[in-house]
Image 1 (cartoon, one colour):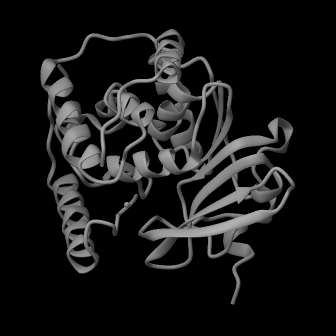
Image 2: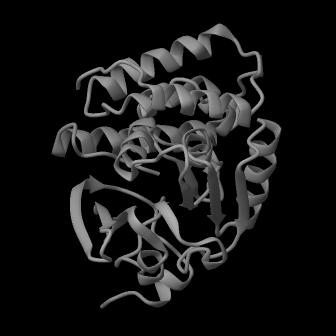
Length: 279
């Protein structure tokens, strides 16, 4: 087991993040989530297929039993007890080792209901918001996914377990390089990570069946809508603090529908998104 190191700086940052998350939750109730943030059904044949695909895509690694128990509690208390009902999402959230995607000194908090700092001014989202955005995106085993804002790679790993191909973009180059190495070490062979600005998506691999954005522009980037396949879904936070979690769905006939889901708090989207801010 990795040693749990502590420092005053990280403790202070974590305390502030937790405090803000608790304040936000108190002000708005459980449906208000903080980022960077039902009923239980039996596993279907599609779920079994996704699980089988995921087990082939990565290398299973031995881990301390306390992490397995922490994941079980996370799924039961933070996800299933709220509004996460997709059995595929619940199964994968209960399998992917989130502690591998946080700093060593914070791995004991990996399955708690709040975001954690991952360096370079960025955070890994609370488990609930990852599950919610994944559920809203409606992944399927034959899907091609675009993940914007790789961070430490956790959302990409979740999508890799549920989709055929995942393309992930991170604007902070050191984070992109670390995530690429981490995902490879964990055995994810269906994820491609590159450093760059995600505002214009990844046209070389478009169209995408689903797109998830983990940073908030003040408007919906049109290039991302254009890169959605018919029937595809784009899930992203939009606005300033707090933002709205928005789902953009492209119908089979090309018509686009937009729906706001809940208030959230994400780091702002930088790069071209900031240059094109609406006044």
